[in-house]
Length: 221
Image (cartoon, rainbow, N blue to C red; front, side, top):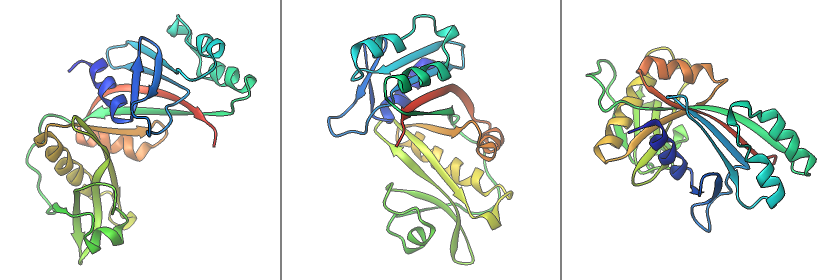
C-alpha cells in the first residue's frame, strides 16, 4: 500500500470520513467528533490537510490553506481562538507493523479473553476481544490489545508493568498482536505522541515502518 492509502485507512479507523479534498465528517451519525483540523505528512513527503466540514463556512475556508508548505499549526490555533473556539494541538507519528515478524525467543505470549480475571486485574478488560499478554508469577506483566479495531485495520495499545520494563516483553506482545491482526486481514497500526520517547524507542526496536506524521487540532475540553 502507498502511504496515502495507509493514512486513509487510519482515518477510517478513527471514525473520520473524508468529503472531497479537504473536509472531514464523522463516519457514523453516532460517532465521535472529528478533529477541527488534521494535517498529515506521509513518508513520501506528501502533505494532506483536512478541516471539520461543520465549522462556519468562512472559518472553514480560511483554514483550508492552499499552500500547505507554509501552513502553521500555531497560526491555525490562533485563528480558531479568535473565532471563539479554544483548541489544543497534538503531534503524532504512525507506523505500520511489517507483514511478518521473525521467530521470537523468551517469554511465552498467550491470548486471553477480556473477561479473564488476570486481564481485569491488569486493567485491559472491556475494550477488545483479544488480549496478548505475558505472565509472571501468575500475574500479567505486559499486554497488547487493539485500542481501535475495524474490519480492515487495528491500532495497538501496549503497556508493561514498570518493574518489568527493558526486558523486551513489550516487543513480544506487540509482535503477537500484529501477527494476529495480519492473519485476520487487518492492517496493524502503531501510533504515539511525538514526545513519547519510550513508544518511539519501542517502534525502533520492533523495526516498524513509519507511514505518516500528523498534527491534530481538537476542541479544548
